[in-house]
Length: 280
Image (cartoon, rainbow, N blue to C red):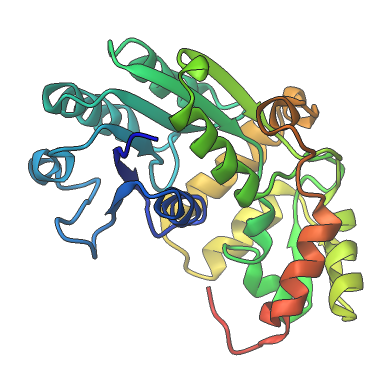
């Protein structure tokens, strides 16, 4: 196997750190793209990207906080431009399933002249254990809108396995994959599954979108965060195409996706959902 050099943006995040671990275990050279790394990678500091891209063969692109936010297209455009100058051979973009704004960023990568694979993902299982839904789970009351929507939650470990596969196999060049879990769950069903795994009482309270937005503002959360969460709950979860299960993980990996129930059992065994002192 040829050793290659990878840049993993978001290299300390939910999918990024898992991809870093897998590539390093396979013997590849991996540069972690984060503000704390050397050289550091910051989406707001494009003047430093040429140093980060030096000597890199392939790049994993995950934009924070989301491809839908203002400025994302400009940032992706600039990164792709600098990647081409640096001689990068392949781009793998983590995109959002059913997000029009994300698709506009996809087009930038597709039209870059560099080999690429687009990976569109549904909502992560890890939103309940490593993101904004962790604290409500710890508190024992999860209040969310769109209670009726069925979601094919996907595991970050499956996304990482797919990313490594498409990086290392050229047959995936020029392809777009949509990653989901194998089952559809409402938020209440997901919370009930977590409660069963942790043997805790965790209540689910359905809210209207307006009630949820107002609650976030009362908590004095940043306006851009409130806007993003509103977007995810309205545009993304409101898109009926996002309640469709795909078989792309099976096709790519030759196995079924991680079941949500298995995810909850694994996380419950770590004790994360029982440590009330943890804050997001």
